[in-house]
Amino acid sequence: MTSAVDDADLARVWAFVERVHAAGDTDEVQAITHLGLLDLVPCDSTSFNWVAPDQVHASIHPSPGRAELDHFQPMLARRWRENPLAEHFRRTADTRPLTWGDVTDAGVWRSSSFFQEFYAPLGVWDQLGIRIPSPPGVVGGLVLNSRESFTDRDRAVLGLVGGHIAHRLHVLGEVSAVRQGLRGAGWEVISVDHNHRVMAVEGATAIAEGCRESEPLPAPLTSLLEFDPAWPVGGPLPPTEPRTLETSVGPVTAFVVRGWLGPHTVFLRVDDVHGQQPVDRATLVEQGLTPRQSEVALLLAQGQSNQRIASTLDISLGTVKKHCQQVFCALDVDNRAAAAAVLVRMIG
Image 1 (cartoon, rainbow, N blue to C red):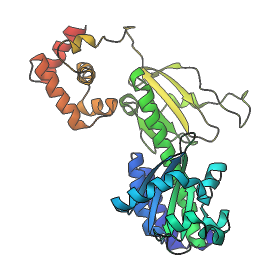
Image 2 (image 1 turned 30 degrees about the vertical axis):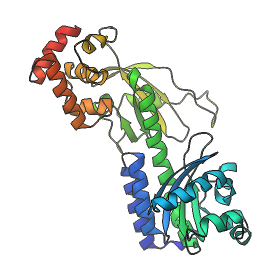
Image 3 (image 1 turned 60 degrees about the horizontal axis):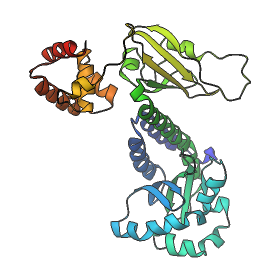
Image 4 (image 1 turned 120 degrees about the vertical axis):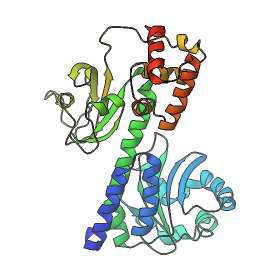
């Protein structure tokens, strides 16, 4: 089917794929996809859809008017399983680019009440879609809508780019979930492909150690990716036991969740070389700081820059500067050095 794509198409496809893999979050992936696919494939709109019983979340471009959304979205939430593509993706693990005609009799479908009441008024004659990563119990799909029938060339283009879009969403979603779930325990996360190149990185220590997107995972972290020959090929791989590694930023505890073909997910946390217990933030709260300001204050006391504090806490640089000013005010100082000195005396 890729024979339907010529050299000019391929050049545009790979330029689009590069933009997708450079995206920093899932919202950016969606924005790049919406604009890029409208340019690559003749269609009227693109939509990321996540549907579950009685609810639907969609990111559509160009977005319909508010009145249209209010009118049609409740119908879609109730009847989405009547869409042949959505039902096919719900029942199978099919990752191919598909149209309505690939999974059902298109003529029968277009005469159905749901098509006549939902898609016909929106001017949608055909859909071309692929599955995308989604939580359990949710059906996720990337769909192109058109007033005309899609061609083999359109299907080939979506086949070339669809896997890259789904993969980038998976990587960024995984990083985001881990970031939210393990940040409080101090873990940082690095996603690595089958060639041991970094696909995504989250955490100031990992960045300081030299983890950079599209570059090889630095030693000694690569030692975590060695396979135990006793494990059955293709079987599920258990997380490794946490190990202490000496790195350029000091000792860290690290482990990895591996896949046979990738991606692999490396977790690391800075060791407390002095064996101290975590600082009780209550002391700082008593000084009038909020819990978030207390977190900023503790990192400031360690001598971390505003940029590293922003990366560690996943907040903007502007928010860090605002919190620092509030910390200065609470401690009755006017600069970082004085604040750090006061904080060291307070928390020991």
